[in-house]
Every structure is written in C-alpha cells, then in structure tokens.
Image (cartoon, rainbow, N blue to C red; front, side, top):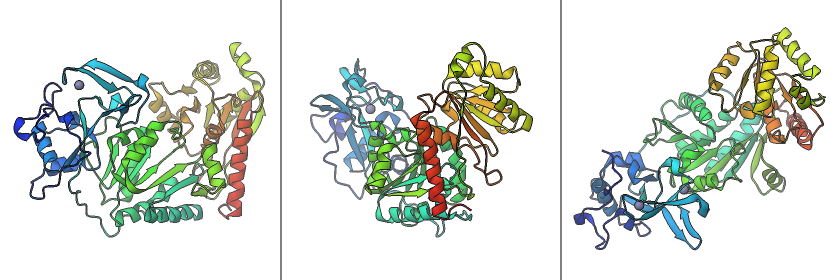
Length: 496
Ligand SMILES: [Zn+2]
Ligand SMILES: [Zn+2]
C-alpha cells in the first residue's frame, strides 16, 4: 500500500504519545524512544530500512504501522528541513543555499511549505514530512568462511595497494589509492572487501556513473558468489534491498544513513568531490561513525597531490599496469590553426594523414575533439574519406549503440568529445586529440584520454598523439604525469 500525500500524515489519536501532536512531522527522534524488546517488529520494514533514510512516502507501509514501530523505539524520524539563522537547510543533501529552496501551498500540511530544490529528484524533502531510519536490531547475515571466489593473481603493484587497503579496513582509516588507468583497480579491492565481510563489516562502492555500477555488478557477484550484492542507480530494481555489498551511484548515497563500515569512492576526481559539497555530505551521512573511506583515482587533484607529498594524506600509488608494460607517452604534433581550417571545411593535413594511415593499417582509433560543434563538422568531413567513421557525444541518443559498434569493429574511427575519456576500454586502439590546447583538456582529462591506449595484455602498446595549435601547461603536465608514473614503476620493479 502506498501513501497518498494528502491528509495521510495525521496520526491516529490512540497512537499519539505527544498530546498536542497530530502530524508525524511534529515528532523528531533527537530524543529516541526506548526500545521495547517484546515488540514484534516487521522484518520487511527492517530489511527495507536498515542503513537507509527514506521519506515517509517511499515506505510501502501504513502510517499506523510505521508510527507503532516508532513508539516502540524501532524507528527514528528526522525533520527534513531545518530552520537556521540564514533560513533553511536540507537534512538529506546539506543544501543551505537559500536560492535552492522554494515554497508551495501544500495539500498535506495546508500551509506554505518549504522544500529543497537541490535533491528534489530523490523525492521531495519538505517541512511537513520526515526521513525515517531503522533503529532496531540489524538483520543477521551469514558470511561463508571464504567469501572471495576470485582466484586470479595480483601484480606486485596491485598487491601493495591491496595490503594497504586491508590495513585501512582493520584500522578504520582513510586511504587514497592512486592507480594508473589500466592498473586493474577492481581486483585491488577484492581482498580488502573479503577482510571486511569476514569481520562482519559491510561495503559500499560508490561511483559517479550509472554505466560503471552496471558493469561492475556482475564482476563483483562473480567474485563473491555467496554474498548478496545490490546495484543502486536511478530506476534500479534493487532499491528496496539491503546487502553486505552495495554498489551505488554517488547520488544514491543520499538515501543512506550511518550504513556502511567501508565506503569506496571510485573515480573520486570525476565527480568533483571537493567542489561538490553535496557528495561529501552524502558520504559522511552514509558511513558509520567508525568506518573507513577509500578513494580511488587515476588523476588526483592538485590539493590531494600536495597533501600526499606533505604526508598529510595516506595514499598508495600503483604506477604500473597489471600487464607490466609502461604507459604510452603522448606525442605532441603541431597542426596549425585547425579551427580556421574547419570553418573552411578543411582539416589539418597531418590529421588527415593520421586518419588515412589508420584506415589503411586497419587499426581502430578514437579521435577526441573539444566540442560538439567541431565534432559534427569533423565527422561530415571524415565521412567523405570513409563513410563508416562516426561521431559520439554526451547527448547522442545512439551513444551506447555506437560504442558497441566500435567495439565490434564496425566503426574504424570514432570521433568523440571528452565523454569517452573514462571507462570505455577497447583492447587494441590508438588515440589522437585534435586541439589538445583547448581549456577543456586539463591534465587530468589528458591523462585519462592517454589511458585508453594499450590497456590489454595482448596489446599493451599503442600511439597517443596530441594535435595542437600551441602547447599548453596542461599538456606538458599530463606528459610529465605519465612519465613520472613510468619512472616510479621502473624504480619499484613494476615493469619489465
Ligand atoms: Zn507541507
Ligand atoms: Zn536537499
């Protein structure tokens, strides 16, 4: 049964233990009710709510049933919107920007009701509703003696990081794992996750992108076959489940409250963790008071790098790929004023040569461009050379299909915006960037783009070219970044 929003928050008089309270939002659990051990609680509600914070409207139970659990100490209520000296703040997403609050004539409380606009797509946080969390006993999960079924071998670099991770799990510490693109970061997590499970801890892997959650889920399930693994993203079917291993988009963390012992944040730089306070707020709410936070990245930001050097941030670096070949180093190639040429419906000669060479060799390639407008012009010019060449960008409805066709070898060259800078792994490709001097190509973007080349053990090398009209600091920093990693890998004996 679902709630209709109107009138349903009126509590039956017989259940109201606060004489002047008729509405559920009058209750708040800053003073929790004592737990009544003889109360027969609903295990369904327990399963649904353990570690979560959900809006009343999200719970498929009657208000009477919910409130009975509250009175018996099995649930907490928290007000959604708090009044502050500046106005309002949102309890779920931490929003305190007054421009991001709005009021409406509310049918439920029959008053002008203020709500948070920032997290509205996760359900409306308004003044007259509450977030509900479970405060009764936790669900019992049986963990087998050997939960990890994966039997692969870690490279020396992976092993080093894995050992540090196990340590961080034991000591409830923070750890940054700085692993080059193609280091094999998922496998690095396995032993640490097993350690967690065996010590009764639960694990969440949070990542900014839904694609990653969907790709990761079968690999984790295969590696931990006897453990429940749930995958959470907008529209996921697992949304009402709880499990020892949770995979979630960073956004979904907003629905959790003091839930996780270990929280692993993947691609922490892709979602500007430091620039987006909402994510930091969500992570802090989702983890238990005593817990470990693990950050994974191939390209830490400047602040973090400084903290690592100064010894203020615990970090482990994996400078080499699991296949023990060094990272391909980008080559800078001047290509003149390519923008001006494009306006005249022409392409730089060396770029055309590079494209034709690849068609002739039958070697697939990504060609990165800074903006969609250039992409469309480029694609029409390149299709005159070979009609199979395609372009792809973030808003392209055929994006998934084109990437799949590229993987299948049907598209020889895929022109792309930075949308493909991460995640997409195709075994044997070369990569070029046209207009590498553009602002959009930061050190981190260029390192990620270069990281597309030579990832598989079968094809561990490849070519990465930055076609430019004037080299930038970011280009130089990206090249140095890669060279430094290679140097460190040699020093550690991680490459042959
Ligand atoms: Zn209201
Ligand atoms: Zn909010």
